[in-house]
Length: 430
Image (cartoon, rainbow, N blue to C red; front, side, top):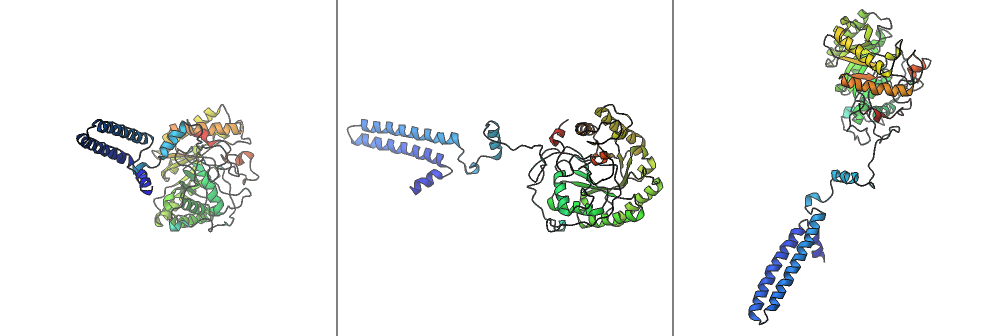
């Protein structure tokens, strides 16, 4: 029995059956001829030949059954992954996992984009609670499994998203919290914009992205609204973080955010930009683009000249008149094109912030969740059509901006607890 079992478990048993059957036919024919010669009853041999042929026919037919039900070659012992899903599409009893609009967890896959805010307020330094035991340092450059990372097989909804990591009470998040948040952000965008290096936010973001192998680029920021000492502190931290981790993850650095609108002179701002660029070149980081971010109406040709790109904040939510979401979106595109034509002189123009609050009051613009969804959908499609890079404002609701206008706290596409405020799959098509 063991020999017979090994024979039928052979990957080439079909060929064996056919070969033995053919040999059997010839053997029986020869025996029949001999018997017909020796014995007077030749019909016995003919009958034997007929029976043998029937047996062979049966065996061949049986072997064909095997060949139609399975490929017996050793290379295809199991159905392929593609075959499984092709069969599943025709079989209602097979369940194929799908993306839902529930809050993204380690196993939930969502698709979305990046935003950016123009109303950054000064924050006091709070010491960071780093959890190095939870995430290994990126200095080891070890590849970490992305089994629980967001799905990158489909195009993420937004080009970029502004990211402020502060806890709801305004304190600094630890490394594990930043890593968890960026895990979700990476499912909706490939770029994040930071405004400062305080709370170790750049260092934590670099370590989280490196350790978890997230597909995110960082567009860093230096906070200069509090003067030269704060700018110098941010710059020192920026250089130390970029050198400690993979500086190729840093796609650029904005020196300030809307500082002309806060009263800083253009000459002072240009001085800061030139100082940062010179320092980065000295430190071997001259490959990182240096620029500032300002409201489109205040960005001059002189300022554009010292910037590697022109990054503007455009918020139609504060306009004195409102017609429709479509008109608000087209206004952004028009203002970008105006800067391209009159200011940029051929340099890249990128939107540093645009968005729509889901609550509050900024004037005639109706601030509702429905209009926020409508704005991000329509703006995404308009930006894609115009091949426009942008940061959508912003990742999560900024409840840490306590005491500020309600609208300032409700620009996020995630809630303050990082629950999606709407189904990001609604952003997947135009």
